Amino acid sequence: MKLERFYGILIPILSIILGMVVGAIVMLAGGYNPIDGFDQLFYGIFGEPYSIGETLRAAAPLIFAGLAVAFAFRTGLFNIGVEGQVLVGWMVAVWIGIEFDLPTAIHLPLALIGAGLAGALWASIPGILKARFHVHEVITSIMMNYIALYVTNDILRHVIGIENERTESVKETASLASPFLQELTDFSRLHNGIFIAVLAALVFWFILWKTTLGYELRAVGFNKSAAEYAGMGVNKNIVLSFVISGVFAGLAGAMEGLGTFQNMTLNASFTGVGFDGIAVALLGANNPIGVVLAALLFAGLNIGGLSMQQIGIPPELIKIIIAFIIIFVASGYAIRLLIEKFTVKKTEDKKVKGADK
Image (cartoon, rainbow, N blue to C red; front, side, top):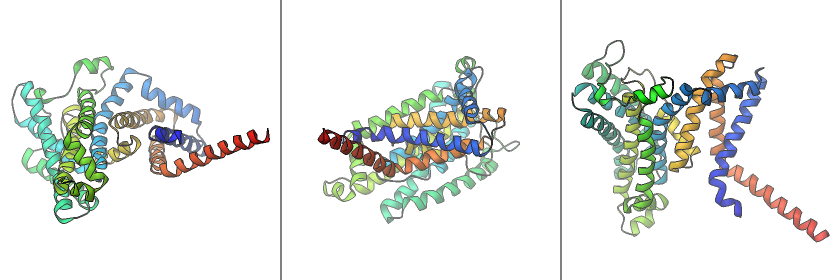
């Protein structure tokens, strides 16, 4: 069927539309005007330079988190521990940003590399357990999230040191802040991390589709037995997949620690960046371009949703829309069946009409 080649684009678009429709129905049920609601939502995303800047700023960590989840998906693995890897990457980036006194050309790259390595190290644990002992990665990576939450809090208290529940700000030489971008967007918190995030999407594409390593990783994801028969190191590639995924996740933390907040606070709960990355990867069909676009959408919805309070609509409504978008994306197979059923019926009707003539 000709439509099959477009399912990767069609289903996410339909999911977004259906999610918006459900959001409109919920607004009506709550006594709100959906036209006014969506008008305020889109104004909150595109209406002012500040809003655009905040949307791009919020998209940077989501791009990295989405790439982390998508990389593991592409290699047949489910890295649900991105949230924990974000936390350790954030912590290490801030620690390097505070502890060292170096020129920018060394300090900033060092902080970014440290964040990526921290995420990789944390991700390697479920990878090794999966490869060596066949422990399911979903279980171990979920557990690693909670370990990361409490370990980072303890290190912040007793090693890095905190004042008023947060660390001191990173040195200017390790900061991703951009006065030019901030001034351009009415002094939003937009920083240079957005450029690094887009570059990371290109790296994702290059590794998976332009290198021998990427070919092996995808082959292991498609069929472990066939890959092993072909002489590929299955266990090695499982660990490598988690390590590379962890690098992306650790850098997501660096976007927050070196860019948005310039510090790290004690966390009573998860940041949500890693879990949102799962939704971003699903909506983006595990494709780097799709992940970037999905991250921009989710960031826009979250930032624009805050402006809906101005007309009395609770911002939690955006969470409902996002949840239904995810549900519809996850129900992609059912949507595909409905599309095929509709198109087949339409084709048959045309044939019947043609025969009658």
